[in-house]
Length: 367
Image (cartoon, rainbow, N blue to C red):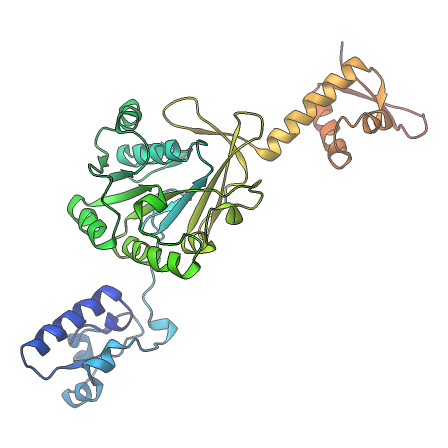
């Protein structure tokens, strides 16, 4: 007989099953007593008797081993819940859950993942967010050891644990032993299809079967598990649709971090889709050192680009009006008014009232 949370707590139920199996193997006739949950949480044997329970009542709760192994429905108020959400990286990477970092090859997902490892190892900041310090393992299946080691040394994070044999797949039992042995708070698997045995990446059911043990391990141990993954070909306009293979990858993870490189430039954009916390809107990601940092959001960058184009046009074409700007397609019509307003308020442009038809104002650059 275990406490009442055996009905809802996977680890307690596993211990209960193991004990019943052991006793059955010894020839015992096993009955399992499932105590009813209380309004204030789980109930133990002492709580049961304090609340007026009897021995006869215990017999009424006894069930056979086969019946007890089946999960029984319980009242929602009896389910154990966590009142405090544990973030590994504040507001972005949850402890005890699965996160995916996705991008096309050579965009920077491994560099970003290593920077996260370094920040958690040191208890510093990652993308401007505080990290909970703890032991970290970076399991690399693609990059050369020399490059990986050099990056971590540049971050002054030499204590990150590594995988000496890339032939070792991240099977849940092995990974569980490593998390327990090293008391890991963060594990990064780089990359998903190389580190986890998935027969067909396009098979939804197969992908979920492969990832479920990893996600369950994260939730049972409280260790954050992050996998890197490749994006499929295409423009990646929707982060969830851009990941290569089955939607089971996106669906299983609690957080998807997506990286993109702008066509024809070296500018990268990061965004997130999160089950918990607030999504990161498309924002410039700048790699100019060991730790990447966030730049302007895409919306902010658009405003700056529009303003630069407006100022340049007005400088070459003094006293231009609205129709002149639209005819030259300087700024999209939907954004023009806001851009002019911003340029005037910052003193980059002077705006004068005009009586000309179709041009209610003229613009010029201050002398």
